[in-house]
Length: 297
Figure: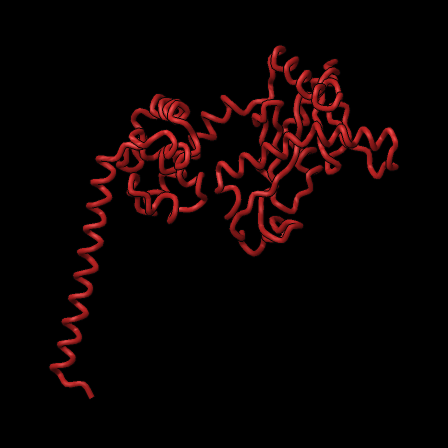
């Protein structure tokens, strides 16, 4: 049995531990505030800067100016806008909080604070930045340049881009919806359709569909297909996209022949088709390796 003295000794020891834990937490908060008030990501060397944020300084400043000019008064949390952007890009680059944001000496953000920041910045990028850069409309000069590039690849005329789907891994959704998101590869995902041009620039993105959705369903329900159909009906007949066998053959979408005989003209076309279309696969690979949050949940 414990004596009264030993009980009070144990209780006093527990109080001391709690006080020490509170002191450590307070010191951590103060340290993070000091880091945020003194940190400037622009002081990093160029090589480290690109490694940390996957952008050069010019691109970073372009996005920063865009945010500040649209939200000059926005203050969801008391963190400078430059650190909000840096923290978000660091998360996108690494795919996690603990390694990419929480432990970085030059950011100093607690996880609850960062969660608010991430949502705010991502919503801004989708609303303001994406429409400026991810757009399917090509100028006449861009169309000519794209057609020439793709024709030089394998001799297929009139091509302006390539389309493909890729699975983006997500955390398991609620039980009732899991069957819609569980894909054929054995994990929960979104089936995202992307279109790229001859420079590997993403021209269109549709991330609305669950992982169990087939590529053809994503294509048929996309705004892009409706737009291309209207243009075709209006007389535009001189440009095409390339897609793999998961997509339907359309007047504006060229897909490979199914099961052609070896050595046949259809087989030769499929070889040229594959050589020309692999640019979208390379684009997806570059995108996921640059922003590694797309590689895992």
